[in-house]
Length: 243
Image 1 (cartoon, rainbow, N blue to C red):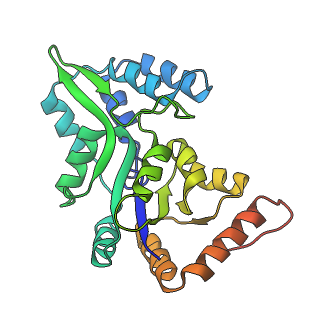
Image 2 (tube, rainbow, N blue to C red; image 1 turned 180 degrees about the vertical axis):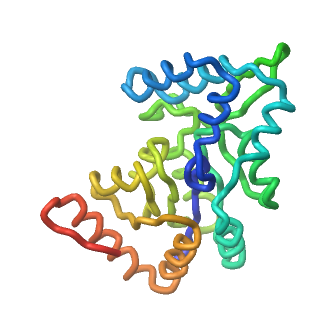
């Protein structure tokens, strides 16, 4: 079986939401009111982030200095090397900010990874603008980066279709999780996968994710069957199962 991996960035590769950290540092408190609208479901994440980015006031140098403090899961570089050695395509697919992702990955020697995300554009007067080249008008969650559409396209790329593995932690991954063949999930995405009965495996860090991926490659059908069984059990409160 041929696999491809789509990996979230904020809270998955990093230990924090990098976009929120930038807003905390360089935007007035109104950004949290916009966040509340998104959490209430009255606006999509694309509108939410567009309005929030418009509040940022910082020079490019200040933004970049802040990003120097962002740390990643220390096992992620080894996970990337594991995928590369086995010719498994790995892309960072994020509803976050490309400038932040490129800066953080580049600092850890991972600048070669494909990144699909919103674009953060510097404007005069310490202002910023968000553009969303990966958006889709048909996106069910009105995201800046429509992860489900991108995964569907990627699955058909190349000489043979690939099965899709999604690795993520939050609400921006919900749509893609429904169309992925398998999900490595934590935090909000884990609860969502359990509630929806999606084939998934819980993970805590990329050291564990690497072990899980190795097991998947060694016995794909058995591994996916266990993941599906765990999903069914999780969706049934009186039954419990572990993968």
